[in-house]
Image 1 (cartoon, one colour):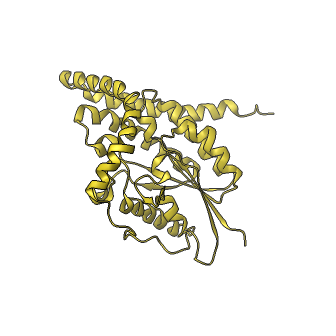
Image 2: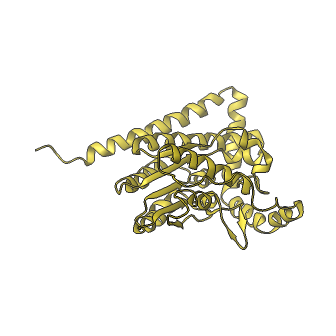
Image 3: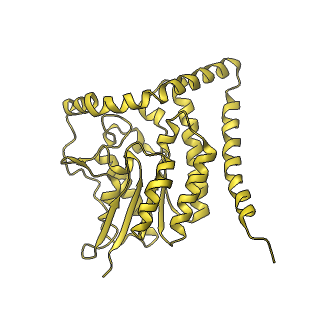
Length: 287
């Protein structure tokens, strides 16, 4: 019997950061893989996600590697790291995701997508810093929603809900889920896949397998790996974030904050409209 092949693409969320098992990360995708088929049916799981990955990495590196596996199911969860960069470009992000989704659907792969909460609110940043990131993440989520419908993906809406405010769901860095949070994502994905008749195995358990890390262990992680993560982001994100915050404050003082939302909305609409224009220009001339 040919095994069901599941390939996961993305960044640290899909890599499993926040859900340690031994010296490695596990994460929601690995938990989901165990429930895609009955216990007596084989499932081959390949995790190509890499911490810090952006949409460009998924398009240029992870997608070719994933297609080579000839998967039956593929998850593409990406975009948060794009919002954390000064190079954020919703037009480029939209075009890349469209190519990635199309590549999998062209091979009749079941495609899994998800929209996510904005990192600013998860990190508890001040309003002037959090709002620009929230605006960017809403733009990404709008694009993911539209492209998921366009390509017939199985989409999970995880950008809102009570689970986001439950501190027990999140790891020490407040940006990645802990084991409980990863299990929630796996459970919710399993539910939508079971409804579609794709997941036929037992749903992952919501109960954690390991004890919650102690406060000391969490502080130790933040002082080592967490500090390194912040240092890498600050060299790129912080100057841009301060610029965005300054713009936010100026617009608020002038009473023109709504213009920033309108500008972002127009950019998203233009990025999605550009896909249709590209398709029309690439069609062969009629005979």
